[in-house]
Image 1 (cartoon, rainbow, N blue to C red):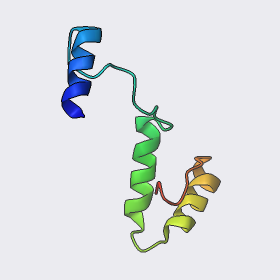
Image 2: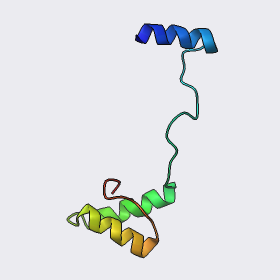
Image 3: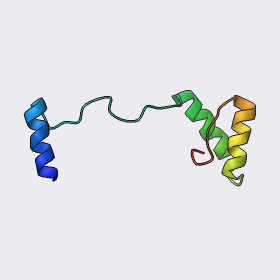
Length: 68
């Protein structure tokens, strides 16, 4: 249960805060995120798979259609 896991965490670490560095690592930098955002905003009607292809061709950024 939730209470049990909180008590266990307290006993093991002395704190109930989440440990740092346990999340999924980023694959894009903030600069690449800005490029992706700018490209998407410039043509809102373009389909996501087409947007992913354009980013790969023009900026050498490989993302999936779900990311865009």
